[in-house]
Length: 81
Image 1 (cartoon, rainbow, N blue to C red):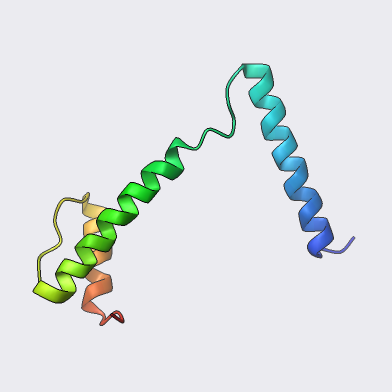
Image 2 (cartoon, rainbow, N blue to C red):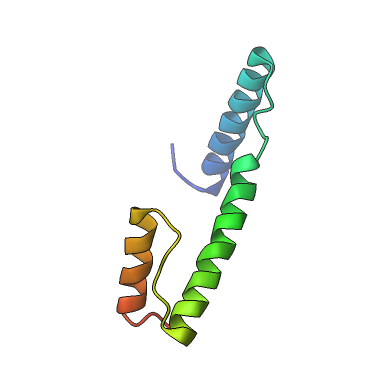
């Protein structure tokens, strides 16, 4: 067997079907995307912080330690504006 686009598509469909079937059995919505909505909110906060840090040299604040360090490293290495 080859790992081409057709085979990958089949794997994705199989996984999606499996996920939907598990949701039906457990009576949950497998495709409820509250995490996606949360990610959009957090991405907006990150974008605002990056803009403030670039324009006003503001310190990174309001994030957990992992995100703070990631943003500080990103800014320190001369990320493109």
